[in-house]
Image 1 (cartoon, helix red, strand yellow):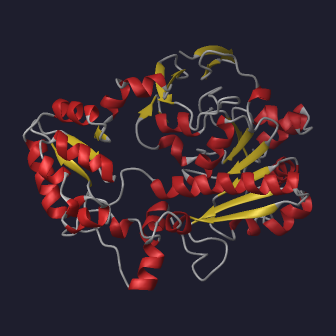
Image 2 (image 1 turned 180 degrees about the vertical axis):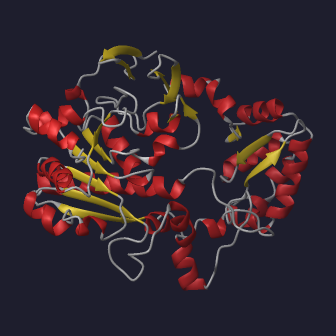
Image 3 (image 1 turned 180 degrees about the horizontal axis):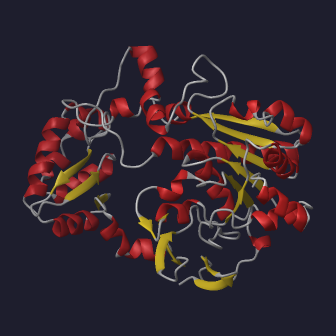
Length: 419
């Protein structure tokens, strides 16, 4: 289990497994990242960087900070989500409406490798913190800009949350059942996918700068485009055939069988038996050698043409067995399958535990809690959790001092509301 070490007045969990980690063992050690973002897309992008060793300095408004601090389930007034989303980050406060607050941020950015922001396009320009100003201040800066519609185009000035990106990017249209309105996934997937594109883009820009001798540049990620990029064959199928993919419930259209089925004890099992050899094994496990040896079902095209028949048979078979029996039979036949996991299932699952997907941490009041482990797993330079999401402005004095501000200047900044 991860152990804890003292970190000021708080306890900082280390997700280190069986060996010690130091900063030089993390792949992004030495990178300085400034985060001007709130809620999900920008902060999730920098969370990934912080988990793998980058020094992430999160700039928050002095009054209240990131609204995510108050979202969903709260413990002692602070969101549990916050403690995960802001882990390994340093929190400083700066009033961007105050000239001295903006000067503090400019000095931070002048020393940064990466700036991540998710304001509406034009906001930073009005504050004198747009790309044209920043590239003069710091020619090597990589600026990741996450927004609903990107920095250009007729929609750029419109507000656009992840839900809008999921809708415009095509995900919502195909999600749900054909006889019902579109539905959303239960998480903010549009924001999170955009954040991943932002992190990938930042690392590509750094690679260009460091290996090819390039300068800094802007990584422009639109939330709707992050989703659109994930839409598989949608574009060529429409362009070539005029085909518009519709909602199909739990099945994977054009790939058969791949579906979720209900067992006798009311549980839900997902089965993916769309490989030719796998389908044969599945049918034999069901006692249907006739279907396993049917030449018309030997390939995906033949199976998809008879998918209603196949799904009906699988539905009936699952309905005649309890979940445990279904999973045992399919495991023995080497057919990919899984129960549909809830958090209860995850916490007791040996695969999650073996892969260290739960990291023990400690809340500020001393209460232990579990947070998600680190993804991806790097064999030589793994990421880790050094501390949970910080208190608002916890590192302001430390960071100001590192920039050369004197104690008197820091006191004055606090007095006049700049930080």
